[in-house]
Length: 233
Ligand code: SF4
Ligand code: FES
Image (tube, rainbow, N blue to C red):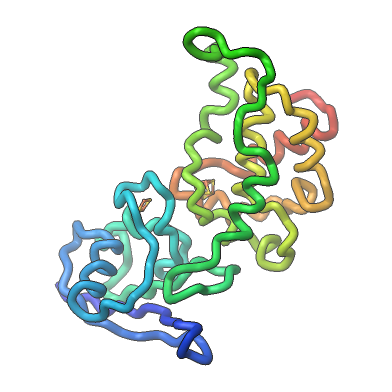
């Protein structure tokens, strides 16, 4: 089947502004958008820039705007798209480094700000730090995050306020604030309750719609709001 694929191109070293370039690609319904992009790069234009690594929805590196929705190229089958025209653009709300590659530095910086690691001054036991099934259940959904950035780049608050920590960093904070083994709950809560954090979430739900791992990020942010207020969780 022949697909018409329109890709936003931009090379800051030679282009004054981004433009769309069209390609015709033979592909089967069970192929992925990532396969289409790799075909274009190997058969038609080796200068096409994109990020990808695992190819299986694990590393989070190939999130992009596909037919107007933030999705993983490796997890999007052609049969799941309408028609034979595909428009592919970089994730919105970030500076383009080249073609489909955005500058992710601000995203990672915000992730680092919430201290995305277990803090526990007690010496580790011989095997592992245990928690009960009920304690794990509280953080299980948040641990599915692959840090693809699709949520943060879908958030209108992130688009309009570059200081906002954004849904991905807030979810990462939740993952440790509600981890029974962690000892930095208060410190993290103060970070997320700052004027750059949870109170700037207006429950628009774009993040939830964009998440390829179907994480209810807004629910987690609401739990953070309740924790910051000291109300029952
Ligand atoms: S919460 Fe979902 S959309 Fe956001 S970074 Fe994690 S996996 Fe990606
Ligand atoms: S290439 Fe790793 S998630 Fe798509």
